[in-house]
Length: 113
Image 1 (cartoon, rainbow, N blue to C red):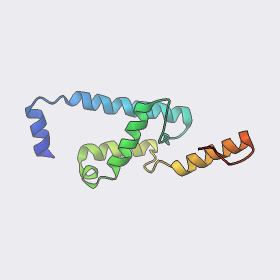
Image 2 (image 1 turned 60 degrees about the vertical axis):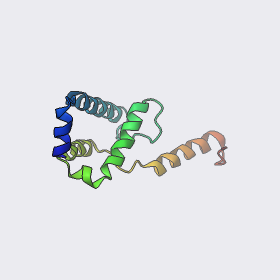
Image 3 (image 1 turned 135 degrees about the vertical axis):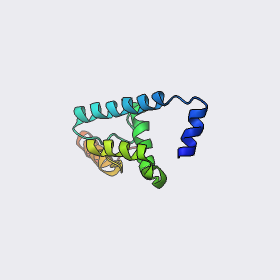
Image 4 (image 1 turned 90 degrees about the horizontal axis):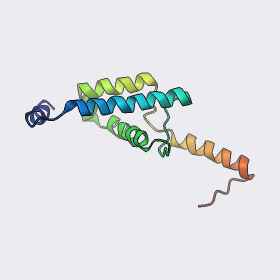
């Protein structure tokens, strides 16, 4: 990692853009949590596609062993965990709740394709 950082710095890589982007998404996640009471951003989230993609990316990054060892990512993962971030993306529960809503509205569970 150190070599890679040195290479990026040698060509004038702008770290502020990366840091600012991280902070913007983290703030959006915090706003989501304040509005919804949890950090379980749906796998498909039409209200904020940027947050949707970022959350899914964080879930993939978390599974990457090399990334988990890096100090910057350790700190970021700790920030997400402090918010109660859902690493698995509890999609089954979300789909079940959607099915319950559908059944209540339609009287059956035969969801069209």
